[in-house]
Amino acid sequence: MAIRLAASNLGWTKEEDEKVYARLKELGYEGLELAPTRIFTRQPYEHLSSAAIFAGYLYQNYGLEIPSLQSIWFGQNGNIFNQEDAARLEEYTAQAFEFARAVRCPSLVFGCPRQRNCPPDHQPQEAEAFFTRLGILAGQKGVYLALEANPPIYNTNYLNTTRQAFDLVKKLDIPGLTVNLDLGTMIQNGESLNDYLGDLKYVSHIHISEPGLAPIQPRPIHRELALLLHAVGYKGFVSLEMKAADYDTLDRCLTYLKEVFG
Image (cartoon, rainbow, N blue to C red):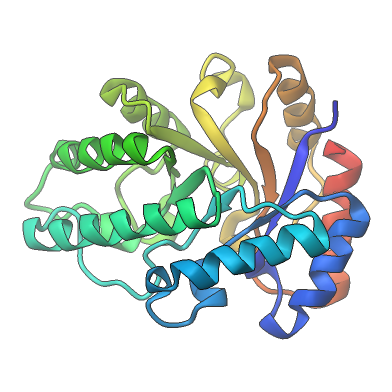
């Protein structure tokens, strides 16, 4: 059975949306990973009806679901280690959960490296209560908050490795809290898939990416991952994640992922 493929809409410009949607359909992709502010520039979570209509349009015209939201705090300031900021960001995330429900999206990526950087006078464990509350709320709303490890190149010192992300999710042990497996992080850190063979049951979404979100380069780890996902019966999506590039570069990456995972 083919692995279900998606692409993040950060990989092209707004003007190219329809062209790329059509190409995704042509290649057999089934998902569009959504950065909400790419569609609704201001206050995206206040547009639930429009979001639901957009999701219906995508599916009816291109057969595309929305398996994941990313950049869920784009434009937001603050830090989760500051109590007042954390309360405001928690409320904003609750709105993101409602948006996800409106577009029938099961998983929300929590990257947000800048807002989760641990200040010198704080301890990483202080964030556990924050994620516990959000994980419980996510479960109540029928979605997953998927923690993504970000290496220090993204200016954060918290959850820098994939192992740390898995360990936190397992420690908190909340059904609404999962891991977003990010290959760009693994590549940057020199991590191996073999280190996480027993942890894939905690993964709700996967990013095929490069450090710095550069265009995808063919790598042995991609085919290793494809074999592993088939072996464990992974049911989620594998998503192309990269910065906006010219159409030919994007198409090369989309075609490559289809060849590897399709």
